[in-house]
Length: 446
Ligand code: PHE
Image (tube, rainbow, N blue to C red):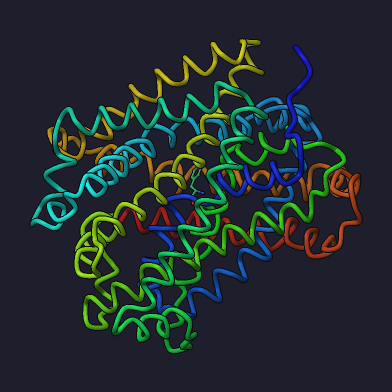
């Protein structure tokens, strides 16, 4: 095999990894979870998880990847043969998420186009969203286009594709986020929302909030899906790994917080201060927000900017998903990149089709009570990801000498939070992960 590609600079790597982390999870899922679980308190709990558990697992995954210089399957195998299955699970998670993530990406493209062509008002009509996603053909076309846009970047490789795209898209994303947050906060009545989002009211404490914050942290940092292992494998041994982790986390939490400012105050202003207006699942982004934009003035422009922002965030995430899968199949079958990318593209489009049809013509087809999209979401986020993360901790904390990983971190700089890392990876992280797994399975069983 030819020499493994590397990111050309630390900043390129950080932007690409942050691009993976910043996605629909930050812009849509985080604000509505924050609203549901008590605003400021959720934010505080979330940040604590990011800085402890998230820091630990991301460091472990990047170090595993950089140590082995292999994609997940090979990397886990190289560390310990008995743990190859963890790499298989991680790659499988990415492979299963990519198709349904692209279905949602396709909805975002559609909304973006509707707003920029000046027709945003249409989306505020009753049932616009539910009848759009139930259509048999059109959403599949946009889903395929979303996958192809991802392919367009990934096929160019690590440096010329992923790194370059991240360097362009991520700065634009920040600017748009700041702009929209400011506009949103300036709406009359928005201050109540800002206060709700920031004030940690202990009365809102609940065990569910803790679990939800932890689950959100995993999803939002793109952990346990082979991505950070893959990106770590392209990280130069010279680059400071610990600082990179901090920067990626800062980016991810920063955009989540900006999204909170963008969405919570605007919806508060719109709904007369009712936090349940935010608690609408996907409906928040596709039903409530379009109405909010239409009342804000410059609705089409604001909606267009918003959906462009979401589109960029989703694209840099799907790029990382596709890359994790492509790296795996190419390492595994010794394929050339091009061949790997094309095959994964076709599969992603095909596997996404049931998730799209499940919103309409196939809505009666249920797997364990879930439609296709929700089923893929459940099996990856609630089952496979915790299982993979759990065994990663066991491998790093108990099976290997932990120094194998900490020495990898120290190659480039002193490991400042080494003690925290060791205690977390050995004891606290596995316990937390088991708690997530049990709670999500109980929740699914109703
Ligand atoms: N971290 C991404 C987000 O916050 C989600 C994601 C999931 C990205 C899976 C890649 C893979 O939306």
